[in-house]
Every structure is written in C-alpha cells, then in structure tokens.
Image: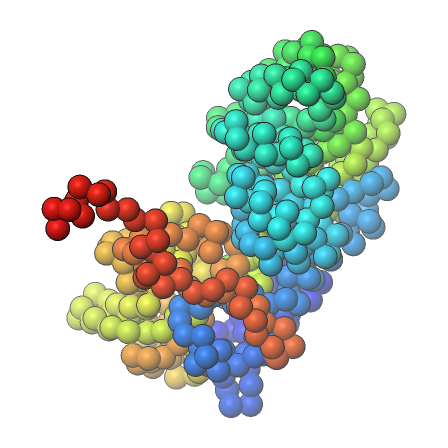
Length: 456
Ligand SMILES: Cc1ncc(COP(=O)(O)O)c(C=O)c1O
C-alpha cells in the first residue's frame, strides 16, 4: 500500500511552491479532504465537477514571499511582476495588485484583464514575439511599458513615437545563452529561442535605438525558462545582465530597470525539490548586487516575473470518476469527467502531478494501480499514466494538486467541452471567480451563412 505521504508532510507556509498541496489543506474528522476551510465534497455538491479551486491564503503567501524577499535582499528599488499567462483573470489581476505586485501580459486580452482587475498601468509590462499593431497601440494608449522583442517591434514603436512627437520608454528582451534543465518547450534563454534579441546583436541594437529620436531604453529583460530547480542559471543571469547594462552605457543608454523573468519551479510530485522563493530571490539579488558593486554601478530597479510559483500550488482540480475499463494483465483505465481541455499539460509536456481521492485522501487500503484518462476523443488524453488509489468507484471524486498555473489559462473547448467553473476558497467561504461554461455558450460565436439557412 502506498500512502499519500505528501498529505502528511509538514507544510512550508513561507514558500508554498515547496508543497504539493495548498497551505490550508486539511483532512477533516470525517476523513475527507478540505481546502481553505471548505469541504471539497460540499463544494462539488453545490458547484459540480470538473471544478477548479484556488486557495486565497496560498496565493497571498506566495506574493508576499516575493515581495518580502526582494525587500530583504535587494538594497535598490524592486518590483515582483506576476506573469499573468499562468492564470489570467480579473480576480488574479486584482489579487496580485492588492499585494503590491505588477503584472506581465502578452496580448490585448491579458492587458485588458489586468486593467479591469485594477492593476495600475505603470506596473504592467507588455511582452510578446509577434505583437499586432492593434496591441501595440493599445499598450501605448494606456501608458503600458513595452518589452521590445525584435526589430519589427522596434520599427513600429519608433514610428509611433515619431507620430506622438514625444519620448517612449522601452525595455528590450534578449536571450542570454543560458541552458537550464527543463522541458524544451519551456526553455527560453538559450540562443535557439523564438523570443528576444540574440546577445550577439545587442551592440547593433543599442546603436539603432540611439539613432531614434524618441525611444528611451529604460530596461532589460531576460527569461531563461520555466519549472527550474537549479539556482546557478539565475546567478549567471544576474551577472550577464549587469554586463549588458555596461555595454549599453557605451552607446549612451542608462538602463535602470532589470527584469530577470520568472522560472522558479514548484513541487508537483514527491521527487520534486525546488528552492524556496526566499532562496531564489536571494540568489538573483546577490548576483546583481555583487556585479553592480564590482562595476561601480548604481543598483537598477530589480524586477522578476514569477507565474507558476505564485499560482500553481494554490490551485486544485476536482474530477468525478466515471467509466472503468480493465484490460487484464495490462492496466485499468479510470475515466474522469475532464482531461486535456481543462489541463493540457500532461499531453503537451508529459507533466506529472499528485492526486488523491477526496473521500479517502490518505489512500487507506490502496491496492490498485490505475491509468487516469480524460474524456476527450484522443488516446493521449491521460492525466496519470499510473497512480495508486484506494478502492474507488464511479461517482467518487479525485483531487489533482498543483493545477493553478497553465491549466485554466491553457484550457480549450476541444470536443466542445465547456470550461469548468473556478472557485476561490478562503476561511470556509467559497466564491465563484470564473463561471462554468455551458454548451450553449460555445455556440455563441458560430455563424451559419444566410444561404445555408435558406437551404434548410
Ligand atoms: C517572459 C516570461 N516571463 C515570465 C514567465 C513565467 O514563468 P514561470 O511561470 O515559470 O514563473 C514566462 C513563462 O513562460 C515568460 O515567458
């Protein structure tokens, strides 16, 4: 019998990314799972499944951990910026903003969501390797700082600043050539990346920016990848970025903002052992501080852009078990009422998660290995290739942990399956932060051309 020992581990309340479960997770006297003071079973009775749940305390602790660590270790000004691609909503924008964080957006939709959620425009940065003209105009009109990713961005911003006839502050994104051990789809800092200027091109770029009338190079950005457990790459990144500030000075640019991106990993399974938020911030801060001191440079404003490590551990997804299919001597499939449309990470990145039964979380009397399959018409729609669970039956609930990031934000309507509702739980109260879609919602944008209507 494999006990779900992660449920018994001491919770790190300061750095939620080091836990598999939200910090408020508990097993009630009746032996059932609760989060944020709410019984999962009761939430399901009221809100149905699949169900995304976010725990407010875990979210706030993660935000505070970044803010406090930057204040503790970095002597200059600093700003943690939430990478909203991890989970973008009016609620998330509002929450991170209430904790004093900024926000990074990569589309007009994410920008709009941030503004509607109350993030001040001066705390928003706009990324993207292929921004549309409309998106750039939206950002400029709303005084949002643009991170220039390539020459195409630069040309258009120069044109806009000439038309406006006034200065426009920009940041540039570059690839520092740092390799880190993570999935190739989420590795972005090596030379072969679609994002940012190559480091070897920066002198040319600095000269180009100097040749513009109104573009002011304010900051540098680099992001080396996601779900990273090593600290060394970020130490190297701090040093490289300070060198780039010095190189830019020779072209008359006084860069005073350094954005080191995100990337800190989280604990999805028991074998994952990410550093704490405090250690990560300490590493990057010390590296920038040392390099600045060595080169007699004033401390730039230090920004970082965590996504996953802010929101992932706060999130869980609850599914209901439906069909079982036993293939003797091979495996038993257990199918749930969601899958790749609400969590595309397993099929995209072969991601692993931890899970338990809601009504038998410790896995007492576990003797069964299952393959947990989603309900989509795709053989690869499998959430767990093999997981031990206690005896379970149709109608039982499974809780998957660590689903706060890159689940709802990457969700789809594949097979015309409506997206689940999302709830916020806090001190025994649950509130809806995203309504459940219905199949009728999915018809909203379908149009039957007139001549087809007549034919019918
Ligand atoms: C530019 C940028 N910043 C920040 C992040 C957030 O990374 P993470 O969620 O790993 O912290 C990403 C993720 O892809 C990114 O592309």
